[in-house]
Amino acid sequence: MAAGIDDISIYIPSLYIDAADFAEARGLDPVKLQKGLGVSQMAIVDANQDPACLAANACLKIMQKNKLSPEDIGRLYVSTESSFDESKAMNSYVVGMLEQVYGQGAFEHCGGVETKFACVSGSYALYDNTNWIRAGESEGKHALVVVSDIAKYDMGSSGEMTQGAGAVVMLLNDNPRLLSFDPKVTSTSIKDEYDFYRPFGKETPIVHGQYSNLLYLIQVRKAADAYKKKAIATGLIKLESGETILDHLDYINLHLPYSNMGKKALAYWVRHEWRQLPRWKRILQEIGIDEPIPKDPRGTIESVLGDEEFMAKDHEFTKLFTQTHEYQEVYESKLASSLIASSMIGNLYTASLYLGFRSSLEFEYQKGIDLEGKRIGFGSYGSGSSAMVFSGVVQPEYEDIVKNMNLEMEIGPRRKLTLDEYEDLHENKITPDNSMLNKKKEFVLVDVKTETESRGERRYIFNE
Image 1 (cartoon, rainbow, N blue to C red):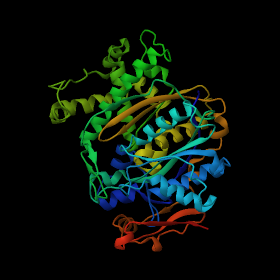
Image 2: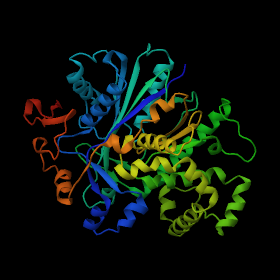
Image 3: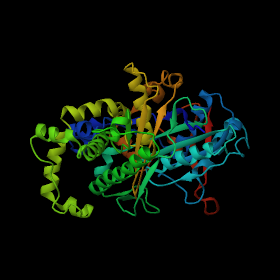
Image 4: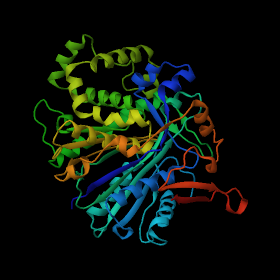
């Protein structure tokens, strides 16, 4: 049975901080943010917003757009790493908000959980719900998978320049207009790591940046190798002499903690795939230097990062490699369009991969490209750590969805924050009743109770 994404919607907070303003205030080079990281603007949540209401607003948008009733929805999953309760699942908050619009008890039949595995959890939720549909358990109903996060880092930290917030929701069913997932090829890699984590009671994560970046590359590569084996074994893809799996993926979407990380991840994957091919000798001649090898090629990530000579040479090699015609052709045709939205919004953790997917569809369609039948590969990563690689094919009815995509219109009017306003919001100095904006026709957080017997209870309203 076919299963996949029928439609996709986003909800992005209307406040943002400009990267150039942020860089100036922090004494940083604006070029480092805009060119080095690919960050131009970072979406910031208002005082009356949290990940649950971002998710609920995204769900309401896609239901209203498709004229769906609660009876049409069989499952509602929320994936996040911005959870604020260690027991009560975020999807129950979302159901509670939606029932303010659709009526009390309207979603009581709807199953679902909150999933957590850093930024990869949304991919696991998609996989679970896709198989629910394939098994015939959906009985004609749709599944909503919403990925919602607030990427927030300590003030003054290196991660502060890679913040963002928002939610992406995907409507899944057995007759998808947008993308049908390829069966029996989804592959994973998992390992116990402390590259990025957020202990109980801490609002911001502990980050080992270089370690996490390299681990991301390695884990996605391992999952991609497993995907390639499955794709060949099932007959989904037949590799001819001199080809790689990348030649059979028309587009590639990768996890984007910041947009330029996608470029690094693609370069790493392409190098891995091309190394054993005849074309590699020609590329090395063009670059003019040999590909560096660490002193301990089978050592730990720590030993590789500690090999300063190798790291410097590898950085230079990667820079030259990404300037070659062969790499640029792959980058521009398969990845570049997926990075546009990320540069305007910032890091969305679980939602970043799917914001990239949404971005790629819109901006490739604007080029006049017929997307029908194109195979899209996804490289998902979550710290802690796990990667998932899977693929799907764009369906004949895709144009019904993609022709109306307009990122700027869907985000809506935005208000640029001053640095003081941003810092007050960051440090939770503003209460929900004093929010910067008073947006209508949206779910907002009203208060969080502090009394002993009801501590932590959150109240939301649909702001008419």
